[in-house]
Amino acid sequence: MTALRLLQRMKRDWMHTGRRPSGLCGAALLVAARMHDFRRTVKEVIRVVKVCESTLRKRLTEFEDTPTSQLTIDEFMKIDLEEECDPPSFTAGQKKLKIQQLEKALSKKLEDFEGEISSYQDEIEIELENSRPKAKVHKRVHIHQGPRAW
Image 1 (cartoon, helix red, strand yellow):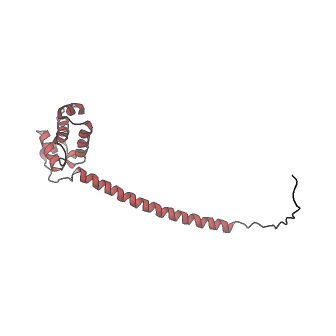
Image 2 (cartoon, rainbow, N blue to C red):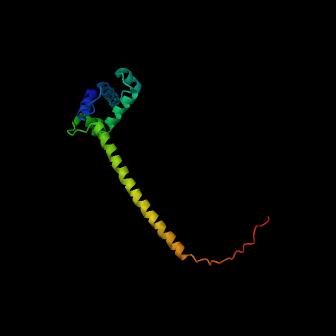
Image 3 (cartoon, rainbow, N blue to C red):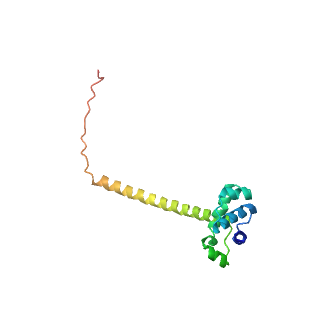
């Protein structure tokens, strides 16, 4: 019964869209078994539902990102959350977009700082050059004596 309830919640959170049901069933079975103190390993569940371990882990990770995963067992059994989550692919796309925006903003700030640093560096070099005592230039007269014999 708990696995079915978990599956219903996963469907409400759009985890089923574009996916085969066996991965969701495996994740629901594993979570339900552990909720009721049945020690089942990931390998045991994989043998039953016939999915790859990485698929099962992805579904568990996606479920972990939902508000339902934060509930206690009693809360999960009693409370039916009204809100729905965005599909995992949409959420991943939003994260990727946000990361790109942050990288762009950081690179712009970095360019600004580099420009500011180089202007300060130029100012410092000019000040150092102006504050150095000027070396006296001695004019040397070279007398050309013809070819030298070494």
